[in-house]
Structures are given as C-alpha cells and as structure tokens.
Image (cartoon, rainbow, N blue to C red):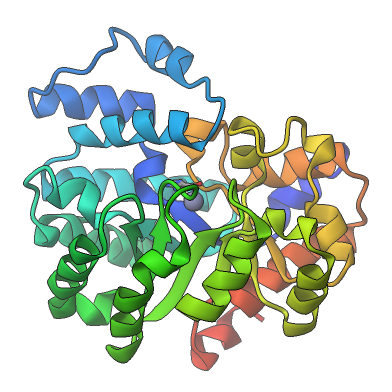
Length: 326
Ligand code: HPA
Ligand code: ZN
C-alpha cells in the first residue's frame, strides 16, 4: 500500500495494550539475567520461534511464562518505558494501558512494586515525550472472583492513578457473570469499566458484558458480526470496540487479514478502533497494525483517519484533555 506514509504521520490513540505484552525477547533476556531467573530459551531467535499460536490459550500460556522475569519496580519501569518509545516512534499521542496485577501478585510481587514502576514511566513519558496516558487494571477471568475482589482492594490506595478496571485472559468457559459482583464494586468506587468479549467467545458474551458488567467499551468484540441485531445496536449506541488486527490473525480469530471484518464494521458506523494488544508477541505496534489493515483492505485516507477519531471518542480523557487532541 502507498498509504504507509499517511499512516506514519497520522496521530494515533491506543486503547487496548497489555504492558506485559510489550515484553520484547531482548528485554526478557536482559531481565532474566538481571534477576537470575532461568528461561527455557537460549537465544532471542528461539523465543521468537516459540511464538506460533493456534488460539488464545496457546498464547496466554507463553505470555504468562514470559512475565515471570518481571520482578522489581525498575523492571516495570523499563518495560513501560520501552513501550512509550515505540509510541513516540509510531506517533501515538495518547495511550490507555492495561496491566494484569494478579499475574504478578500471585508470584509474590507486591501490587505497589508493579504500579509504582508503571506510573513512574508514564509520568516521565508525559514530561519527556509528550505522551498522555491512563492505566486500566485487568482481572484475570480464569481466576475466581474472590481473587479479583482482593485485587480491587489492593488497588484502592492507588485509585487516583487507575482510571478503570478490565477483564482479560481465557474467554471461553469464563463468562461475564463470573465477575458481576467485583465490577459492581469497582463502579461503586468510581472506576470506569471495560472488558474483553467476543474475541473467541460468542456474540452473546458481548451482549452479556454490556448488560451485566455495564462496560463503557468492549475489547475485541469482532464476533459481534455473528449477530446482525447486535451489530445494529452497537452502531446506534456507538459502543466502542477496541479491535486488534494482528492479534486476531496471530491467534486465528481470522485466518487472513483479508478476512478481517474491521473495515466492514467501520463502514456500518461502529466505533471501531485499531490497537496492538500484545505487540511483542503478535508482530507489531500501532503503525504495523494500521498498515496490515490498509494493505489487506482498500480504504480512503478519510477512512483510515476515522480510526483515530473513533479512538478519541472512545477514550477516557477528560474534556480538558480532549482539547489538546483536536
Ligand atoms: N485476550 C485475552 N487476554 C489477553 C489478551 C487477549 O487478547 N492479551 C493479553 N491477555
Ligand atoms: Zn487484549
């Protein structure tokens, strides 16, 4: 496509990014050495060769293992800072990042260590790179709700640093109802809410997520296409879907980018956005995701820019912050 230059120059807003999914093999090696942790790979090439996925679970197993090298506050700072440098490179001007506290607290790393490192990097990114940001903490849906409630309580002292809560990990077998109570508690505390739904799971999970968890956005949501009435409702309500094209092809939600439905959903008037999900694992950051969609689907520049307008509309920035992005 001849649109890569347009995409590179387009200001972008990212709304679906797992910080643990930005751990590049080089940093994984460096942190393994720094923390004296053994990993089952001898070279970064070996790590990259292991990244062949056939579904969500095959990815999650490797992704949780990779996160095991993150120990100190400095590790979480370094991870977040490296991601922000990619943002700068890709002209991402605002990002709302996920982290998975339970992945770390279950290994004996304190919530404080994780959030302090992430927050310090994001503050430095604001000052030195001009990138604004929000933090969303995700509960792991394969764990029980009591664990999520414990995590919510651990987050309360840092409420001013965390804009919202989300829900990720294994979708099939872990429906939205499982976390109904903790989402109600989070909303009571003033957290905004999002949730992964309709990635591998059925369109009904999107309906139930909006109804039961009352979320402001749906992460992924591409399987809405199986339910025409739902698609019409999402278009009418402008419910944001944070779609991750390279993630979806890597995890075989769509076999080929040509089969991806994001452009069709855009043209039906849905508030769809482009995001990188776990860029270190799925082969690219924001520009790569935009380029992959544009290479597989003929679009006008107006249509490509609409992904950014949608992301600004869907973002959790305040009215004052919104002025800066106009
Ligand atoms: N889906 C579910 N859980 C995740 C994902 C995803 O795409 N990325 C990181 N955790
Ligand atoms: Zn995700």
